[in-house]
Image 1 (cartoon, one colour):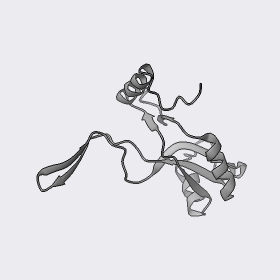
Image 2 (tube, rainbow, N blue to C red):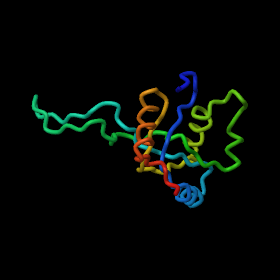
Image 3 (cartoon, rainbow, N blue to C red):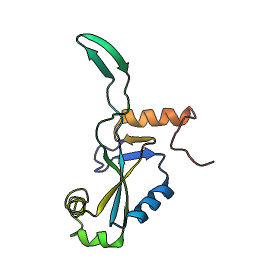
Image 4 (cartoon, one colour):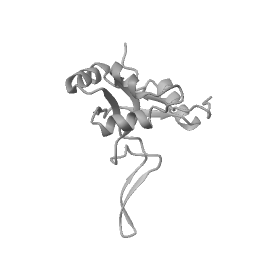
Length: 138
């Protein structure tokens, strides 16, 4: 069961951790966020007047990058956190970004949140069917 009181949604991905760490080490900044394009919640239509030219059921969105919820930090990032009540995604990350200390590792592989029952069922069906893109181990 998904706990709706969770503050942070859970995600599943097939990230290349080595590539993420190599990217982080290459730029010399304090922080790296994994940037992802979220899956669409609804089917997409391309229209020409009232005619449907293209129909795509729940495509990966091509619009914008979002916080994929996976980070690499240098120890100095702790200095940006005021205390236990600090919300990481607010002041610390906003300040790191405005100071040019936050870089984005663009993950274009599989990424799926699991913060609703529907998303949990989708991931369970992929696993049960042997089609789990996040299972990268043998």
